[in-house]
Structure formats: structure tokens, C-alpha cells
View (cartoon, one colour):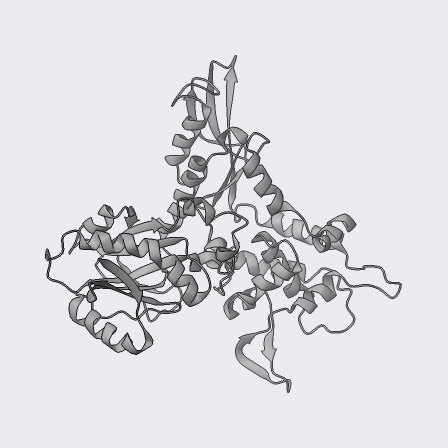
Length: 447
């Protein structure tokens, strides 16, 4: 009978020695959270598996999941990588061993991972070298081929620096539960997954560097109500706050959490000064990150009469001025819709909302009901043939479907889809997502 157990501490050297001896790539060096599994038949080891942290960025995986860069940074721990699968028996000696091992691993790993690291993963990923294997065992075990890599390797784990390795690989993925694909992008996660959905990954700015720098200089002109405790200027604090809200933060706590995930280079782009130590000496190479108190002290500042005196209208005016100046630089907005005559014949159009220019058009036979030729599938197919890099596509509720969202993401864009009451579950999730907490609400009311 096939059984699986976790590699014990005293067996690590033995495990790595066998992995190095039997696997063509040698022993693995998993970073972060790692789990090593030993598979035995009648007490005899027949296979080994090493599971570790997921790859930082994979285009095919990210498109299949449908998450944006900020969500990927926060929830990357919910994906785990099958770094090595090593058989310890001669090829063909144990029929179907590979698929049996893979099936058992998918069933047992979430519980083992939770005991070891305190949370459950949702998705598994792995690579197959197409020059050596077709990944037959993964296909037989129900893994999905989601794409191929471009054949690059990350250099010494340096951030965003890759070199070609000349060995593209096939990427396979497998959910640990049936609804994992939908669950990993949901606003609210069950407790056993939510504990890992706030990874200390690098922050992701929603705008390019030049736009971020110009935002800081524009917000430096907002009137500062503070008379003291101004170690970080108003422009830097408001730039960080604006980026946090644009990335989805709903209150100051989330805005501060976003700020803490930013790198020194990003903080510098946002205008943050160099950090000083307790003696007042500048710490070279490090920028000061606005604290929660700094954000609160500015945005909730009171005058001597106890009234809030941060000028939200002035902040909004400068933010509007900056937005206007970014025309053509920020993501373009494409509006998609269909127009019909007597609900019989019509056109589906994709229009640049800023210029009014029609960028794509396709005929549709009916608004709804005619399979393959009504508005929704025609729009989906039209978007599938477009380069949407850097664009935000908006549609009405008719096209608020998974297919539309995945199509836009796959072609490099983002989306804004209208939701109506006929999609009750989705509407409830949107209500949770857009619920404004007291602090942000008070700022909006004042403006």
C-alpha cells in the first residue's frame, strides 16, 4: 500500500542526497516555506517530492488565475510549487506509480502544509522540461497545462532580473479544491486561506515611475495643516496614500500596510526622504516609510477648535490637475457596448472613451439569446483579437462574465464590469469590497 509522510528533521541530509542522485537536475534548494514528502510502499521509499514557494511572476499562470499584480503580490503564498518529483525505482518497475503519487500528494499536501506552516494552499504549479518529457504523468493525474515559459531564469533571486536559459518549459497547474480558481481571486477568503493572503511581498505601484514622480511634485502644493512632526513632507504622504487607494486600500490601516510593502526605490519615487536612525544620522540606501500615525496625523488633523482642517478639496483639485496632465500616459479607457435596431441586427463597438474614436467593430445578430452571434460572445471574440496592453475595458452588465474578464487579462488589459441584481452572489461580494469604512467616509463627506 502506498503511503505518504513528511520528511523528518533528521532525514533531511538523506532526502537531499537521494534527490541529488536520482533526479537529473540534482537536489533542490527551495526558498521560503518548504515541505519534503516521502512516499513508501510496504515501508520502502519509492518516491520523493519537494514543495516550495511559487514562482514570483509567471504570465501564463497569472492569466489563468485572473489576478492583477497587487493581488498576486498579496496572495502568492496560496500557490505552491512542486519543485522536484523524484522516483527511486527503475522506470516501469511500478506501473502508474507517478500518477498515484501525484494524486496522493494533491489530497494530502494541504493538511500537511497547514500543520507545518499554519495555512492551506489553493493551487499547485510545476514545470516539465519539454526536451526531456511530455509531462504524461501530470496529465494522467488531472493537472492542467496552462502555458509555456519563455526560457528565462532569475539571477541570484534578484528582483525582476532574468537571463535566457534556452530551455522553455511547460507549466502545469492543479487546484487543491474544486473552487480554488474562483476562490483565490475572491474578496473574502475562508480563515484557513486568509491567513496567508497578506504576504510580505514587494508592493506594486499602479502607475509607471514617471507618473508617480510627477504626482509627488503636484501633491507637494497641497496646503499642509501640520505645524510640527513634519519629518515626511505632505507630498510624499499624499502620494503614498493615493497609490494605496488606487491599489485597493479601503482605510488607513490598509494604506499603511501597502506602504510597508514598498521597496526603497518605490518610496524614493514617491518622494520619501532618506531614513534617519535614533541619533538623527542618515541611513544610506534606505528611505523613510510614512507610519500609520503620520497618515492619521495629516488626514485627520484638527485645528485648535477641534475641527478637521485637512483641505480635502485642495487635495482633490491637485489630484484632478495631475490626472488631466497625464492624458495619454495613464491606461487608456476602452468602452465596449452593442447597439441594435429592433433587437434584430446591430453592431458591437469598442470605443476610446477619451477621444471617441472607434477602435473595433463587429456585427451581431441579436442582443441576447442567439448562440454565438449575440452581443456577449461577439464582444468577447472581438476583444480576444485586440492588443489591450495598458488599457482598461469597461462593459455593461450583459458582458459581466468570467470569459470577458479572462479575455481582457490575457490580452494585457484590466477591466471594469457592471454588476446588476441578477447576479446576487457577485453583487454581494462587490458590496463587501466597496464598503467604505468610517475614516475614508469622513474624508469623502467633507469634500
